[in-house]
Image (cartoon, rainbow, N blue to C red; front, side, top):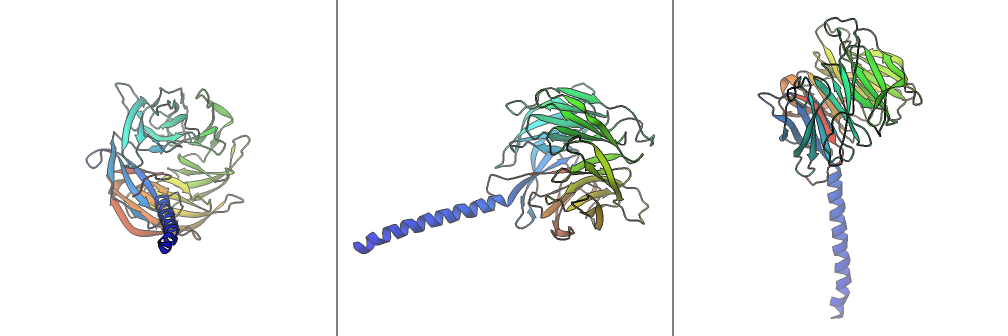
Length: 393
């Protein structure tokens, strides 16, 4: 009897240790797993937004499943609380109006499925980019065809209200075929969470606004824009982790431009412009996506035509770039890519070969190595991670 009595506390302690170990293992497993959403152009091979699961411990990307059926969700963004997903619907007509749309979805982290909450007019035609302000109060959208940007309030239930403001850009640039008028191509917010930067391909400018987080108003900043070389066609912008530098990839020029970013005044001052293409490339090419590693040490830009991802090292003090390598995208027309939240992998979406490809990133050199993985997704044009999955794989 005494022997059995002595065993009881030992068994109880062992049970507690096993439970704690199991929970810790489960938490570690969860921390390695992410949901990845793919925006597409819908048609024969695509019906909307697709979702896969990604394991950052192994680099494995699961086969995609349809998360929500919707028209031309060419760009998607996740709310800060990870419970909502917003997408553009890149069309020129919505409910009989000359407008595209923005859709709000409730995100189920367990299944990856999306439940449509509502849609609103985007405030212009051909919406191609969307972002959410860090407070989760407003969705910002760039309308490419009409050359306008808009802010839409997020209601308490996650649905979208009508646009609180639409700003129409005006002007043109040197390429009469592609720059006869404005073409807003992206909207992004800087580290202060108040300035909005809108790349306008048609104007060769990055427009700079202040967002009033109470009213949703956008007003021109103290320095209202930054100009790029005529004919460049600025497409997307990203910021260094400390917010002191910004990088713009230009679609028409096939260039990546580094700017010093003044945190007080918001002004962008050009530091350097480099080509994303090989010196001997003479074919047709349009640059597309740009992204920094979370560490800020390397930056990546995609080429559609050369069908490659260009890699540059970043001097963190000066913001200047130095070429590292150029890696095949293992597909046609890499319109978009994204780096996983751990900074170990880059996932590229090849629009015209209907495939999504996984690369491993060397943290020391920034170089890319194809993992051999390629999954089929019809006309993939956007890759977006949910920062942390709450469900076991």
